[in-house]
Image (cartoon, rainbow, N blue to C red; front, side, top):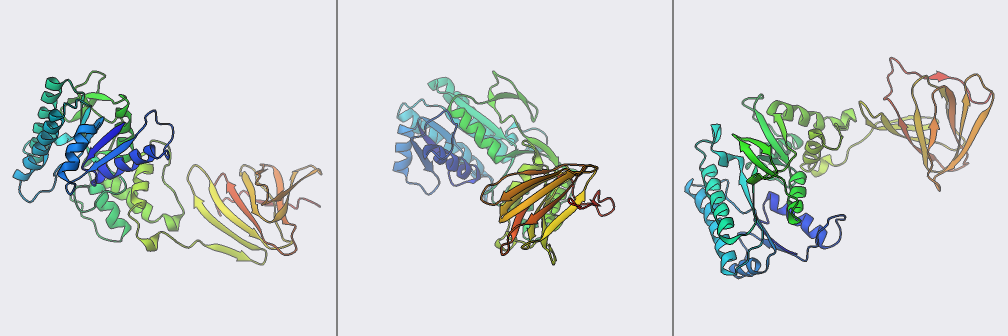
Length: 400
């Protein structure tokens, strides 16, 4: 399959072309399509290339458009006129391949979009597409995008999320006039998955109830089934919490479809070089060190423990707290004994064979560095962050 992407250097275009090329080169797996060529067209491309692309394409994603012109009449020229040129070129070559149009929710011309010149130009392009489909028999897919966010989006342009992410990550001020304003947001990876699904006829259809998307199998329009309605206040709150995470060691809600997970990935993409690395507090004593890496609300604490040669650490037990020890370097012995019992369980471990040893509630346990010269490095997970006010840790040697 040969795929033409217009507006290939824009935010959506760059993300789409990157994944299409991943599929073409065999880097992205489990897609039921074969990509042979990705025709990337943008404003600086050659007209003769555009003509050839339109002749050979098996599918067209039209992402080209104008959203920040110097004059309002440029909306119609940049959005409507290019759509007309694209469709006329496809007609010239009798190429009735499927064609996708990136439109905007502003094309509803409802509420605050009622006088939008951008929306009017997008609506005109939609009607041109629908008429083209009727005349040619070609499949047309029209998506009305809400606000988009994700990596590679240009800040201080037309995305408030990109601007906020960039400014907060780079210690620059942001301006918010009304924190209660709610936005409908669509994440770029969700959009790209939908668009790639459309290549094999698996797009989602919808109608519109005002500005609300209503999924419908026989709908005239198309839509991405996942979007988020979030206030500006919530976005700012989350971004500020992300900024503090190198100090708090926290992580956001990382459940698969959570808005926080996607916003966090977006935020990270705007970090300057100097914030891509940060120090952790290493707690030293004569036995070695203990360093906390990540602290979560619901998924426990992640840490690295370093034990000096011949050193024993631990010698305690917990009521509810449980841990997993993984030795990644060195040679050690982990011992457990159930409280009230004299039987000791010995587990010899080494970085040469990665294994998990469970620290079970009610069992006193330790970890011994068996080496005379080499540090023992252990990755540790605990089901709850350490609470100095309720440590749930009770000293008792494993061997008495």
